[in-house]
Image (tube, rainbow, N blue to C red; front, side):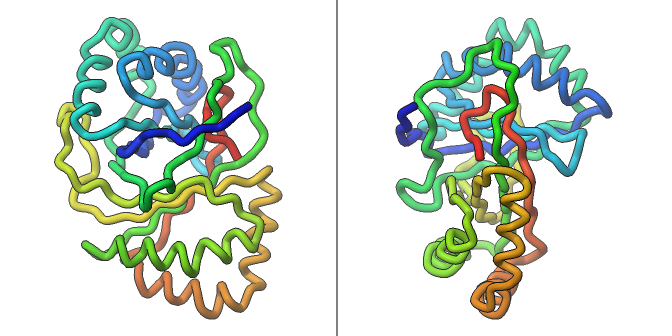
Length: 246
């Protein structure tokens, strides 16, 4: 299956807190009703995931060409018949849905590269692999310096420890063009996504980093100096129809 760069200059990282036991119902509804119908109005549904460390969390990513087209696409979808038909079922699964980061690629070409085809709507096989999303919280206006630090220091060591870097992003600072859906504003983050063949491969990666003097003695202390609070690391298992996989 061929891969092509996704022309998404704006990406939402969405994390939903769900009622206990509701995640599978939401995933089934989402993958059946909300993938092609969002893409038909101009979005890219990039990835959908189960958070392995929180059974009541659903995480997903969607992309847009730019902020004006984001407003247009969201207005078309949330004002359209598919959402009207299914919104009560979707909202019934959720405690809240406003933990949303608005992002842009950290550098040209640092967004996701996705396969051209997606498993069909009847797909049920769970794909192998694990995606790790790491979110660094930074001081305001320090993200560009962190982009350089990641490229020159962190990324080479992550790759040396067998990580596959899938994408990296920084905060998109434009005003929210669709205020009906809140996003986390006033924050500065750098987020990177890595892929692994399995949870065991990820554990081996962590072990390799722990035994690397370049990581523990140099890179990690320097990263700690640059961040405002402890990084978030999400262990994400792709759903059957997710384009992003480990």
